[in-house]
Image 1 (cartoon, rainbow over the protein chains, first blue to last red):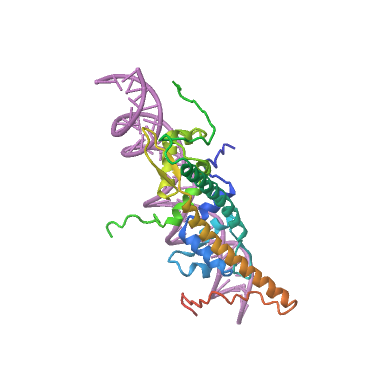
Image 2: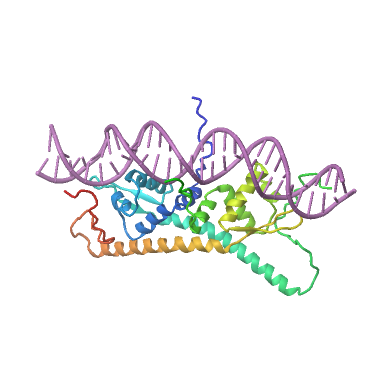
Length: 136
Length: 136
DNA sequence: GGCTTCCTCAACCATCTGGTTGAGAACTGT
DNA sequence: ACAGTTCTCAACCAGATGGTTGAGGAAGCC
């Protein structure tokens, strides 16, 4: 057993979801599925790629837990799991809000001191001294 | 057919943003930048990759318009552009909401008819008959 | 000018990805 | 049982991606 594969495949859920939605075809499929389940054939119809390619796309979405596939005769209805989207929104909103609040605070600070000293980079946040090199 | 390059590089903004955030390192950088601008060196410190790799990551974020780089002496401060995140949230929320509303409606429908007929696939949405191949 | 610091460009490499085709599994229907 | 339909698996290929190292530009410091 010499297998030390799986080198760069980052398996964290968030990465999978983002990566899954980074493809316009896959995003389109999600948009489609938002208005109702569909079979692979139905999903494949609008695109000029092979059915196998669509199947692969669905696998990616499934691995990201964005969709689930059940069995219904020989068809495989695809169902959108919208809850996973919340995971992303939570991540995004957290940092968007943080950044915007910081921006607001900086804005107010600048407003409160109309003409103090023109120090170019007053970055007091991120307390990480970190003198890594020879810090003269 | 001599040269029709740029085959799969989908340049739509949304894809770029999603792809940019599909990498945990890049997501980490964004998280970091949410609490204040930083230089390339500062951003690179926590990771055990080369500075060039970090520079590449920043380029990806920049191409997605998630960050901007200015110039300050020989340093290149990186700034998070949080507004682009709204683009994603808008996309996500649209379909999440749509899917959840549909789910709610289906739920109510099922509740209103406790034991009707067990028709397996009553998908009345998505009107696309579409007999593509040689239909019998 | 010359050294140092910060960062980018260029070439290279391994892996991942999205597409293809061909084969065939799973199930229905007669 | 056999044919038809739906979809997946496997092998393959081209291009993108994330990492490396080496060279070097740009700006500050001596």
